[in-house]
Amino acid sequence: MHNKKYDLFISYVDADSAWVEGYLIDALQQTGVRFLTKPTFRFGSLLSKEFENGIKQSERTLLVVSHAYLANNLHQFITFLAQHYGLEQGIWPVIPLIRDKNIKLPHSFDTLVPLQATDEKESKIAVKRLCAQLKYPIPALLSKPECPYPGMKPFPEAKSSHFFGRNQEIEQLIQRLRRSSFITLIGPSGSGKSSLVFAGLIPALKGNCLFGSEEWLVRSMRPGKEPLSTLKSILGSELKNLTLAVRDTLATEPNAQRLLLIVDQFEEVFTHTKQYEVNKFQKVLLDLVKIPNCSVILTVRADFYPDLMESSLWEQIQSHRLEVLPLNEADLREAIVKPAEDVGVYIENSLVERLVADVGQLCEY
Image 1 (spheres, rainbow, N blue to C red):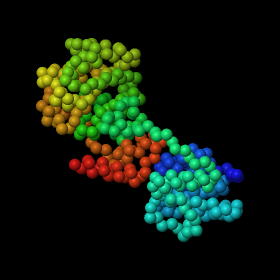
Image 2 (tube, helix red, strand yellow):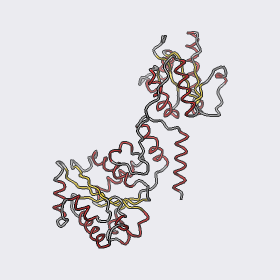
Image 3 (cartoon, helix red, strand yellow):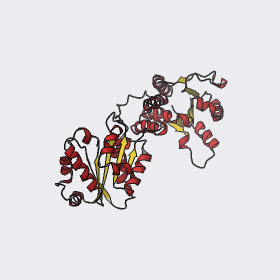
Image 4 (tube, helix red, strand yellow):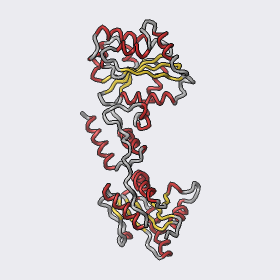
């Protein structure tokens, strides 16, 4: 019999919010546990009064105890309130849930049996024990969520909602497109050049008003052995009159007014294509960027810099290139954590730290 409005008041600090909101609360919601947390407090109310009301209306108070939690003196006030209202009801309502290993608990917790949740296995057991004590069913195993990471493949436009960590570069690309019709992205293999264009730039262009009401038509290709033939199929023309070819291509889409041609993995012209066709292809690209409503973006591996410097495109590349550097620590964390959050998955902080450290070591070589 649940006499109060809530089964649990959950007390935690911001440092533990990812685990609480991404794992614990999700598990409790599955079983129907009624809980209250600080984010649901009323705006403009006294914080101390909101804590008091929340604890008073809850059967139990769950303290998510970590080093960060104990460093916040508020936990003493929360514990006092919970014990005060618990004594009125003749119960001892405080449940400590330990999140960090090797933590020294306050003496006021000496007589309490804590729940341990310092790793994935302990967390699952803690949730089961908590639900059982509150007389709720054990949460069922959830179906395996979609993996938000493409692995060694680039992020396609369709997966742009999972693409994070490159906001600065996306903004740089948009600003450069406003000033120039030619941009070359250069970076090491696997640095995310293609993902930046397809999952970053293209969705941003579709939602950006910096180009007025003009809508973009995006066409992409890889050079391969016969880049001219591929380009002809994209433009639907023999490439003799490029202005007309661009106009006719734009006419295939109702509101398209600007054409963006993406030549991904441009380095293929140096490894797959015969020289006479390389020269012709590069000349066509130079002619395309002279057309007012046409822009060209190349992505190239950095180890092909010597080839680029010898090409007829070098003058344009030298003036309009963007180096794609490894993600800094903050952006790397975002690229790891945010896609998982989007599919309702919590990643342990220790694993995030390990991944950030491992990537940092790789970038040093």
